[in-house]
Figure 1 (cartoon, rainbow, N blue to C red):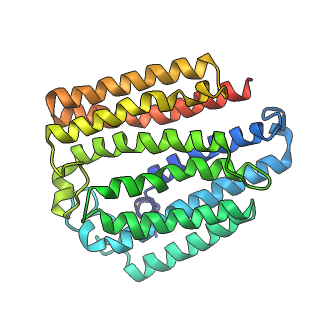
Figure 2 (figure 1 turned 180 degrees about the vertical axis):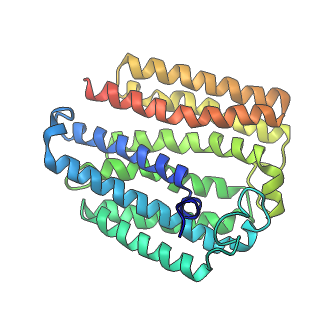
Length: 296
């Protein structure tokens, strides 16, 4: 298989962002567990575990994307943005895709399970929810976005749990999950607005009202408003200082301004600005949380 086909099969850029998010949470967890994270740069154990997280997370995310494409192969043939993926284009059979997905899923789950049992279980849950709940719901109801936001935010939780020796979910883990969970709605509705014509060719119902209308834009703005206080949770609960609070507030207000631009114009151009803004928002906020937290 050519790298170009494999990259499309596993949605490489999306998979990379998922692993990036989990990695940040992992380092935060190491610090929260009492370790000096920067001092731990010389700890072989920490970096071996980090490599396990990266490898396992990559394989599990790739497997979920692979299953998604096996299930939607006939629908992918209908959309311009997906028709050149290896299965709809006929360069790979669904049987081959299924075997590859199973192999990656089993290997990734095993690797993550060696960190602790909860990390492995959360990974299995993420695959099942994304491939077998979110995927079929996309043609039935906009509720699919809510369901999809859960596995979409789980990497932050999985990375944190992986960084804990015995695997546990605490307040910091829930804050990391909450920020990524709420962000998912604005992020995905911006994408859905831009790609609505293509999505409708496959019967996907992803915008809140299923249409590019003012009500869908209003709901998008509401979630952008909710994201403002949620992004400040690290500072509110004293896990971060004024640096993460200030940067998060500025990023959230810019994000809200972009969402308001969509509400004002209802134009694809503004939705595209919001979409690209979402790509920058999450890594900036997560990195600021990381740097501020480890500096405490």
